[in-house]
Image 1 (cartoon, rainbow, N blue to C red):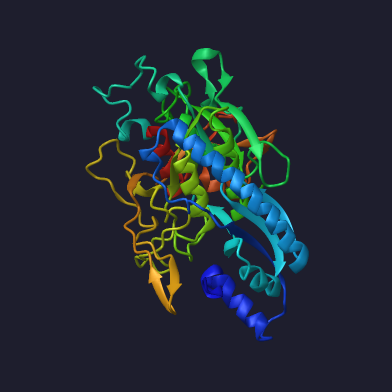
Image 2 (cartoon, one colour):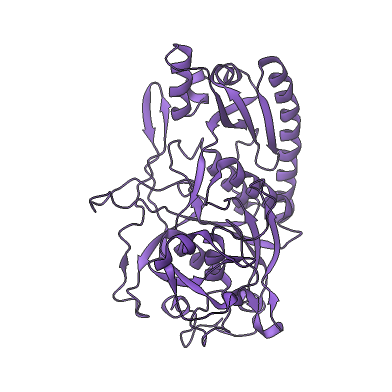
Length: 425
C-alpha cells in the first residue's frame, strides 16, 4: 500500500512539509488504525447474536496481538503509545512528524490520522408525536418500549447532572435516571460543568414531573449511561470519543446499552472508509448497537449563505443515523416546520486519494431531522456552580424557578435534535 494512502490528507501535509524542512519536526497527537482481517465490513445484521459476539471476540484478540507488534515498532522508531482501544482496533499515540512517516511504512498499520479536537453540535413530546392520541407507547405497559425503562442509552458528551428533576424518576420516588457515569477526559470529575450533556440527556429521558410535563422528553422511562468526553470548557479529542465507544462495546451487555447518542464530533476530511471515528462507530453498530450522531451546525456561512457538504464526523459514517435539526417555531403542529438554517447539509465530502485523485464519498446525509431550534430543557449545575454555557451566555437562561434542580435553559443545534431520535430509536 503506498505511503500516501496510509496517512490522512491533513496529516500528510504536515509530514511532507517536515520532510522538506519547511516546518519543524514537531510532535503530534495521532490515532493509529491497526490492520483488520475483516476490515470491519461484515454486516452484523446478517449474523446471529452468538455469531456477532464470536466475530468481535476474534477481532479483539487479533487487535491485542497487533498492538504487541506495534509496541515493538515504537521501540525501534520512537514515539509514545498513550492508549489502546482493542474493541475498535485503534491506538492513540504521540509521535514526531518524521516518526509518523516511518511508522506508516510498517505492515501492521492501516492508517494514521490526527487526534483532532471534538466539540458539541449544539414542547418536544408533543411535536414528535409521543403524547398524541393513538400513539401505542404513550404511557402503556409494553415492556418493549422505552416508557417503562427497558434498556439504556449511552450519552457521550460533557457529563450529566444527575440531580436535575428532569433526570429523576418521579414514579419511583425520585431515583436517578443516570445509572452509571464515567470520565474519559482525564479530569476524574463526574458531572457536567459545561452544561451540554445534561441538556442532551434530558431531551432523551426528561421526566414529566416538572411544570405539568412541559419538558417531558420522548423516552422518559429510559435510563442513561453518561460517558464524559468533553471537559469543563466543552473541548475533547477524537481519542476521548473513541475510548468511550470502545468502553461501550465492551460493556454493552453488562449495562444493557441499546443506543448510543453522540451530539459531538469534528470536521470531516477523511473518507468514512479511513476516518477513525467512523471506524469506531461502525464497530459499535456491528456489535449490535444503534448509533445516533448529530450532523453538525455548519449549514450557513457568516453572511447567511447556505453551505453544502458540511456534515461532520462521525455523522459521515453510513451505518450511523445522522440527524439534522428542524425549526418547529414553537408550535406542536409539524405543518410549519422547516429545516434550521444552521443545520449541516450533505453530501458528505470526506475523501481519499486514489492514484493522485481525490475520491469524495458524496453520501446523502443527514438521514433524518428532528426539532433542534431553541429547545428548552435541563440547566446543569455542578454542586452549587451553574454550568459554563448558561453562566457565560445568560440569554440561554429561561424560567422563573429558583431551585437549581428545576432550572432550565434554551439551546439550539443538531446536538438537540440527535437525542430526540436516540430516544425514539
